[in-house]
Image (cartoon, rainbow, N blue to C red; front, side, top):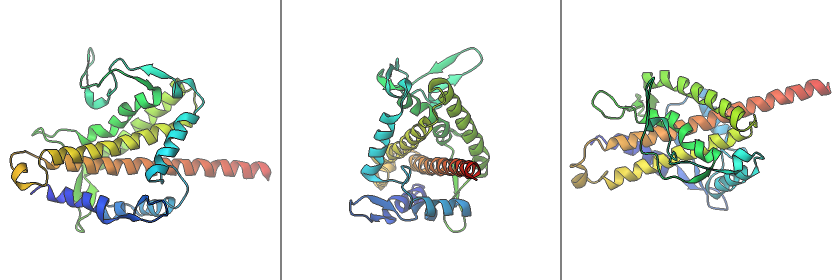
Length: 270
């Protein structure tokens, strides 16, 4: 069945490379991304190096949620903590919008609610990457963003390699403008926005796997009556890959900023 290939890669990510490694019993991945996806030497070094550091993007289990909540409450700006009425735009992502020069159509937006601005922006910002996972081909099926290499690892298709840097650039430009216009240039909110987006992508991966299961995925008798179930697994893999790509790029940007600040301090002291 066509589900086998993506299912095996998800098993590799979530089952084979997880185990208890600390006194609190958090689940810690063991090179699972490196053994699933084709990564450059720089990406592999980053994966192996920064996970040993005390960084919120490297934390797991309850530690991750604790630091995320502390960050959300610590940003000293009204837009970061005060709630706004969403008017039903709770799920206002790019994938829920049709746009031309004269009109804007929005659908499947969710229930009206009160939310802080960073939480309200999460679905919109996440959709920059989510939309690639839901792009339709000429048959109306979702485009698969990966192909297998000779070693059985997943690598991005050539089209995706071309698109992803453009999407990341658009995402960064948008985040920069939101920080300047809504948060008066408080760049600490960037970490919160990126962590929210990463969490939302992982949440979508879980949703996709559950959707695949409830539709009969992995069950030969039930899945025979469903078409193209593997699309949910490929989308989950995309969510996982791009969430790690965001995490890695943010850490690299943070590290370069700290190095620059250190050089300026050394110059001043010298």
